[in-house]
Image (cartoon, rainbow, N blue to C red; front, side, top):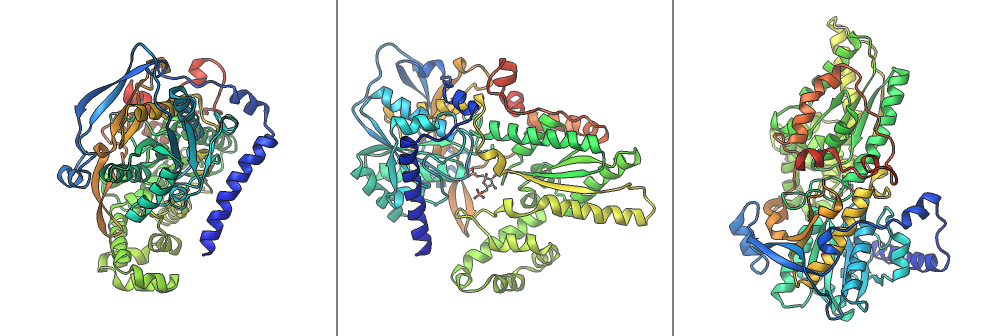
Length: 572
Ligand code: FBP
């Protein structure tokens, strides 16, 4: 009941804040004012009338038979590409809904403004409704109309505060039916879900259900997440990754300069990215740290926690032997889940929790820990007991609504620094020279998720939103908005759509096999990782730091309009 009251209170606050902002516009910095006037670039194909050209039919990335069975109405649809044509693009009046879902990512407001401008271009009488605080707003009928005045307040700004975001999982028929009630009431014919892999899985399931019952509501997804793990041949990047990694690289560079000035600390920096190490890899490519761990490599090499600690301690001791008692180490947030032994432990924990959920809901946290320790297999129980209490409690107790371990709450950077200190102390006892080891710890995650979008993200997001409106006009459902060729100038970007089912596979979630979008992990035979691997020994030995400085919104293209190094290496 308290959660319900809080949710309604927060929804009301968002509506009231937007009304107050229209009467008394928010005070703005000079940069905000200049930035509000920025006109994001659109691909050529989206600037005038266009036609949808269908490509080859698609199939899911894996488990084709199971996925096909679960999505009989939306499976196998073809790729879609928009091409310029003569004439005028208009549609009958239609209302559209939009949802921001999951973690914040820079550029979400531009997806919404692009969508708004797109539907207004199709028909000036079209209306856009925003569902408040994520998918929960659809189910609980919390919404607001997004007027031109509201949209103008948020153009080119960071954050998701225009309508807020949430992580409610849409999976039950009752939720879909409840959502349909309000969509019908508001005359909404198409819904855009802006989210990561979990949220676009929601979008896919919803699209399938509405098509199956002939509800007359199209569902379109947009690829969001700073983690960068929602990508494939047709989705070159999830939005927000560009800006967030630039913000983190700026502060990593500042820390490196401090480190290189004082020459007395090892800085351990954890970077967001729950299930993939793309953020850490990109920041390493931008700043050249002395140590950088890539979770996918740790897993592929079957490393233990002790192996990881030893590898860092070796770099520390080697630098110390050459008079450098300082350095910078980058650690991906999801590292712990990549260590094979811990991964197996988490899988058993997930099954154990799912099988005993009813029991678990009634007991205290300490009782849960005791229950888990008593019921795990012998090997996993031993690993569970060997972990520091903070880590084992996190692994055992906290899950988000999609069943993910909340790795942002595990202090991996502190854990590794402490374990390296213990290792160095052991080596010292054996007579090895290890120098002096003083540490500082940092976690960069939330700092970057709501930054004002870089020019690349501002343009990409606006194009994704505008493109979503064209997918609706083309009558599509179950598609994700796709903008390609993005390492080239925006003029040459390619707009289209891909069926979301194409990205699906079957995975175990909360103890059951479910269709979900397959996460794109760092490819160890890919160009970004190979480039990093070819340089890391040099970066470990010497001090090759690069200080990227803050994001530039104005200035020459080589300073203000560059995509990430990952994208350049992957696409160019
Ligand atoms: P999305 O996948 O929803 O974009 O969120 C990713 C993320 O930013 C992770 O990097 C991080 O682990 C997580 O969100 C933190 O979640 P929360 O905002 O709920 O603390």
